[in-house]
Length: 208
Length: 205
Figure 1: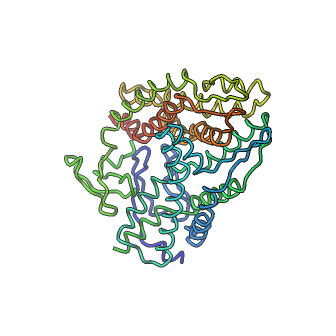
Figure 2 (figure 1 turned 30 degrees about the vertical axis):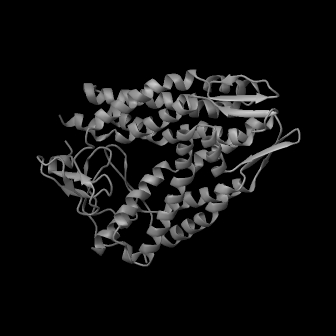
Figure 3 (figure 1 turned 90 degrees about the horizontal axis):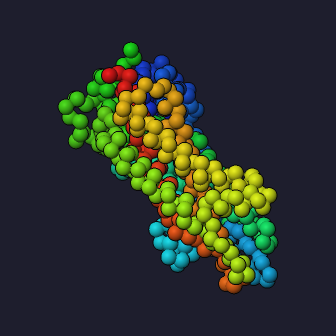
């Protein structure tokens, strides 16, 4: 699998941060490589573990529905209780008149992570089967955009802060949604760790 | 002096990183042969966009910090909190660690981002002789920390939903939440539009 993924390569690269022209044909494809002038990451290290990427994206997608619908925190105070889920929080903000804010939270905590996983799955699957669709470049571009706006790790920290804030006033319970969110987050981290965008682009170029 | 891709007529594609041969005249209207995105030597109008977004964020930082962001009412009592008074309340409630996290995410990070963006843009605009390595480091730093400012908004969305019990306890978001959200998004976009290669171009002039 790895052999077919290390085809001919460019001999020159430009540093994304300082535009220094770098000759890289002597650098192995799996070696991490930094710009000598500004230390920017010019090439990721390691092989592209497609199977792991595919597995992580699939697991993330499976966990995604309970992660956004199951209760994350449950709060009890003098007999009354309330709970929230990712989608429930978005909906509540919307009904409170904070439509723009709720759309922003929706984008960063639900939409972007979902498409990040979905596109990861699509990219890994089509690379695995060596059948790249015609809109593969669009997938890769959207994958990068979604990666930038997916902030589930920040949301997780938000859960912790909200939990501690409510501890004083009543009883707080961690719901099943939190475990699913943690699982999705783990899958997203694995996806980010093993994906090699440059390898995917090179595969696409070779196919043509 | 080391050579830039620009000097060889090569432009790095923003989407896929491929080096594309461009003639210096045709700054625009060229497409990457690999991914078909528009290619240019530098992010076009990078400084104008960054200035506009940064100044807008700077203006919105005022309402974001002055107006109430969260109102906690329990048994009919409770005052609206601004970002800073919320941090102080957490600190006084012996929750120093959480107070520090909230302070860093909602006060320190947005202010630091705006200061750094202003500094970087002034360096490029006025050709200030600052170390390019350190400027690039600052740029990477604000790119990395920018997203963590969303923490406060996520926390608000959790709190208003969970603590929603009529007369007993209620949490409502305030007008500062929207302003704060706008600050976070605008600074993230400003950092995206800023092209760090403009800093290094100063060394070649």
